[in-house]
Image (cartoon, rainbow, N blue to C red; front, side, top):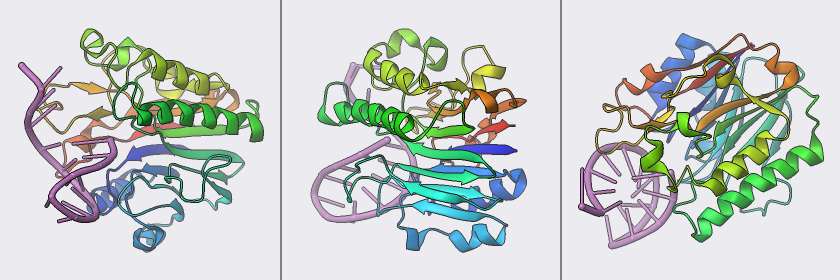
Length: 254
DNA sequence: ATGGTAGGATTCCTA
């Protein structure tokens, strides 16, 4: 089973790139973030023609998550526990062949110690609460997406320059570890221990050319699935294509 | 030295 996650930064702007990537890679499951379209505007029919079922939670202009699956999806669930009806669309879950899969888009947080930053920390705490309330670490669970937090020094291009900056503050890293502490294994780190593997590069200042990136997109697996994990990759080539997203796909083989 | 680019909204917000 091959599972991928990708923040596409608008499915409208990335339509051809994502369709082409899906045709070539044929993942069993593809989790998307920042689709930036309502469900009516999502190109569901095109993915269905490629053999995928579509579960989506979209909104106008911002956010938006989806799961595409070659196998049928059951128990589709949108949002956190006690989300307001107008809460940003940042989380969708579905059960696929006995595996519970989540596609998550964690709030960016804007800048340390602003109200959006506090919301980001709260959102991660509420994600842990959802896991505690509805799931068990002994279950087969995949939590993947854009977490907007780099875990440790290996995951930022310059730990010195990034100390205390958004995506790498102690508070954000603690909040992410709280989620992982539910009972997850970082699939990419099972197979790659060295520094300098990134999933996001700023569009500005030639960041990709200089490889000034961050690893902020993850696939987290509970132990039963971690034991089945044979490979994990970051598809950096997706950033070399025309009109790329600022994020690239992360893929795990189970 | 605090810039720069991109997407999607409408002369600004989010990332």
